[in-house]
Length: 103
Length: 502
Image 1 (cartoon, helix red, strand yellow):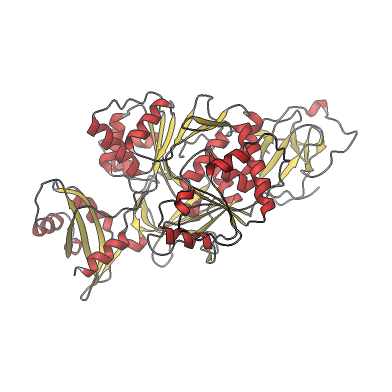
Image 2 (cartoon, rainbow over the protein chains, first blue to last red; image 1 turned 60 degrees about the vertical axis):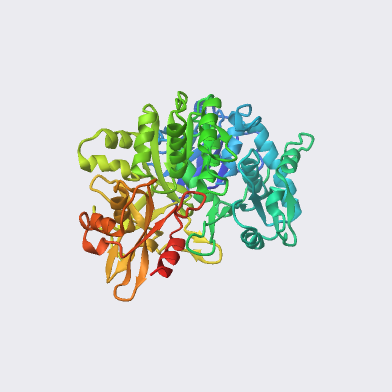
């Protein structure tokens, strides 16, 4: 459990998923992917931890994931098989507002 | 949060898609990431502290930007139209640097100690050498400097604007949907690599996984031909460029059809009404977007979207019609406030100083520091107002306001009136020192072909339409007005010249 820092990147312990923290409230929360706590990019993946089949909704690269209160937002920078959750609440894809290309 | 992430994601999802085309050459997203990593490792090992770029647009420009990110160093593209002494002065400010440059631009320039200088071809050959394998670099922190741009210096010595990874990525994540481009999409990059729009074009296109077509040297014909040949779907131009394209189309009577073009964005200066209206006539199916932004704000902070253009173009209501000449509404991730001289927020419709706040706003210069106030607001130095619908209208630069006997006069309104005179082809209004009023109104005018008009006639023209304080005290007839290469008028030069003539 730790506070999440906007701009930092994390990886899943049980699949290929990687995320970047876009927005985070200051509380200490547990961010999980596929039922296992997410890790710092440099950390070793622990042995013996596997994807919980019930929490395998999958992540898609480029999609934003948020909680119902929109206190946290993550950008998936690499897709994987696990689903994301914060303190047990499954995160959902946030619909992006389409902007016209300005460059 | 690092600009390199845009390329890592694009290379992961679309490694085979063409990232950049320039003339006969092309590079794919997968190749571009490998190239950036290779050159990044070489540059990092050199011990240099900056990555300089002094060349026209080519495949090398985006590779250099991402190589700098891999090396964890600021990328500093510089204006290749500067004089040798100006180039020399900028190089001294980034020593020691890894410099990718056109050798012809460095003839007679003393290279500071510690520099490594390579030409474009050597840089590309080494970065594309597939026999060299390198690992993914450890990305720099979000608050590390990603890009350093020297301002154009129209009001003095160039300032080094600092853009951090978190500023640029805040803009990209707030405005671009990852992978949104269709496989056949292509964007034409005509702005030079040292312009903020050239930087944001690379980052936006990469994050959208859209092919960039780099145009080394702009002229109206080349732009139109390249659009047609490369089946360009999106393009960004500064107003001067659009004016040149239209001059070429109307002058040469060529076929201007651009069936592939879907979106044309413009920004970087005031768009003359006849130019945008003619463009909308020429290409009625194209979506036009006006983007307002500054170097210090990581580019776009407000947009007039295609719908706003059509509302303005087709409306008979003057309040809606004038929308075509606004810069639209702030994008979702920034706030805009208009303030009076005492810093108090102004209501809709009142002209004041434009302030902006948001994650993409850097507002910081090397050696000067941050210009953000305690609440994070940045003074753009632009004047303007927001109408009751939330549209932002610009009214020139704060530095250009003429203070005549305590009255603030905007050059823009006088220029607009003079430009409507049939004999006038171009005009700029500047302040001129005056013993009685402190400052007074000076006008530099260019006359259409063999038309004839007297100073008195022009003064009467202004007096009939504006208050008498707006009537130019000094009028100078000229063959042409001084512009910089991005189409910005050099008001400082005119002020100096008109002051001497009084």
